[in-house]
Image (cartoon, rainbow, N blue to C red; front, side, top):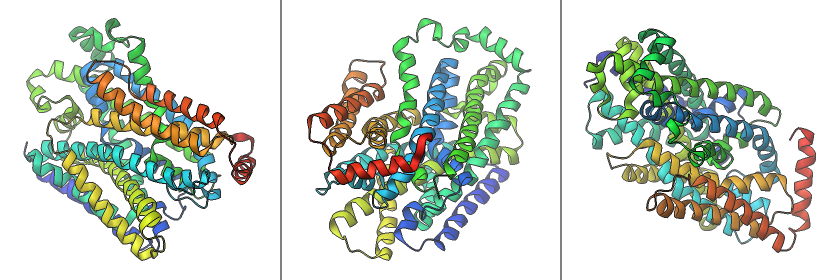
Amino acid sequence: MTASTPLLVTFAAYLLLMVGIGFWAWRSTRSFDDYILGGRSLGSYVTALSAGASDMSGWLLLGLPGALYLAGVSEAWIALGLVLGAWANWKFVAGPLRVYTEHASNALTLPDYFTNRFADTGKLLRVIAALVILVFFAVYCASGIVAGARLFESVFGLPYAQALWWGAAATILYTLVGGFLAVSWTDTVQATLMIFALILTPVVVIFSTGGLGHSLAMIEHVDPAKLDWFRGGELGFVGIVSLLAWGLGYCGQPHILARFMAADSLATIPRARRIGMTWMILCLAGAITVGLFGNAYFAMNPEQVGALGGNPERIFIALATLLFDPWVAGVLLSAILAAIMSTLSCQLLVCSSALTEDLYRGFLRPLASQRELVWVGRAMVLAVALVAIWIARDPESRVLGLVSYAWAGFGAAFGPLVLVSLSWKRMTRAGALAGMLTGAIVVIAWKQVAVDQYGSQLYEMVPGFFSALVAIVVVSLLGPEPPGHVQRTHDKVRAQLGGGY
């Protein structure tokens, strides 16, 4: 399709606003701490919406509605798992991690936290954690690049190779310039735009198909299996467990955990949790509704199914352009761009921090000035973005598949490690290293062998997460206890947290 003037104007206005926020944040970025963690200054509202927007990437408006359109309500098990996992992450990880990172020598990154939490003088934990971040975030960033390319390809009629660059350009610019504050402030705007789109669009889709009852009857008439949570018996126990297991990944996602670390105080967390969970539930419900009831719309309007271009992940794009005035459609499609940019920007920033804080300053230039570190961080944002664009160059890439793999990698490598490190003082450095390596290796091996070669339906998150958990406990118990000062720090943190955690 060729973009209309309203689409061009709304997209241009949105992109200029995001870049403008980036340059405004530049004025508040005076040190490397500001650049990668915002000086721990986020209030509850920004913490909540920034965490939500960085979590719900283009997958929310492309991958999830596409999955519901293609397979029906059985794919909604993913959303249920995500809601449970996100709530547990806010409840049991957010507050303790915020406090512990301060006690762990004011750690700015996850590798920094692991290094100081376990008194790892050899810095092996820092190196391995930084490498895990770079490997899986390269894939995760690529999913954002693909989603952006799909949007620009659909809306502006660009070839995929050109759409890659246009989709990534604005995100790279404001992240490179403004750092963490730019990412967090833009996330807040983007989260607001996303929830607006995911409340308005489902309502209009349902009304355009004759109301809720008529829409459900139409879907049942066309394909009853799409209203079956078990997909006519096709989705068994292993399939449901695999979909629910997405929730296990939350406590290991560096881009979400960074928001907890940046909150201005422990008191901010409970209110942020309420805001964040409300936003998340409404957005997921909207995405599910768009995908599912898109079946009813195209069953009633089969002549318009060509708007999908043969790709179910374009369902939101197609419905927005078919059902709304071009000006409103432009705002709604900007919400897809908001979802993509919000996640991609913080992923680029986390990769940059791993390269700059954990490798460059950690090993090459320990006495580097704050100005030097900020500029190295900006250079690393650009470098990681170029690698992600290279990975995303295949036009057959699917957003959901890329996100699934990276989500499992982080969930298994870091999730058990973060959970146990916050709650068990007997955990050792060797246990942390064993858990991180086991989780990452099992995810990669299970995906490459069990899933790709033998067709296993079990999501690689499940064996990766639980094998890492076992490795942490067993290796920690087999070795000597942690040093006394490490255990005393743990006791101090738990005392500061009180009984609420």
